[in-house]
Image (cartoon, rainbow, N blue to C red; front, top):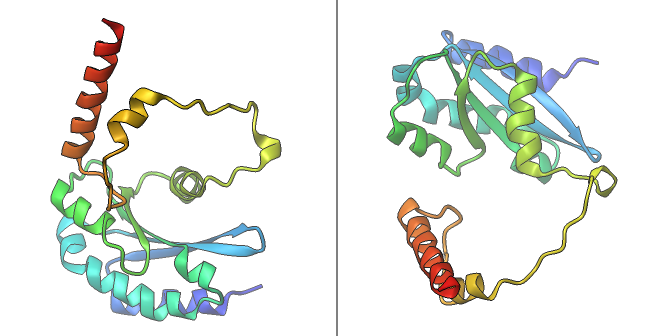
Length: 180
């Protein structure tokens, strides 16, 4: 069965961004779908100049036409760059940490769509059925870790490297003190 939304979106995308390629892939998950849009054939300069326009275009032309909130909230946008192209860290950080409309990921174009979905979508969602677990584990309370972290407030989802290093150093010191 043809997906008219995808066909229309791909045709309009190609008119708006003629040098780029686009592929839409859907993953069925528990009666709903997760949508992944793969945009390729970009170099670093095109990515830098056009990633906001591309994101906005996808949000308006495709994402807004999805059937459920679940589908609209679970859209992955992959920017595929040629193998060996180095993207500046600040640009990659800006794009991948932008929260408007979709989860954005910059990847190597040599990876297959299936490999990218397995790497980012399936792993990110932790779609684990209890029957697929090979062993169970029991969480054990660690008073040392609790003691270090009890007064910490983490307001942001992404912990800054400096905060992570400080917490690690504090834990290391605590464990050394306990062993002495």
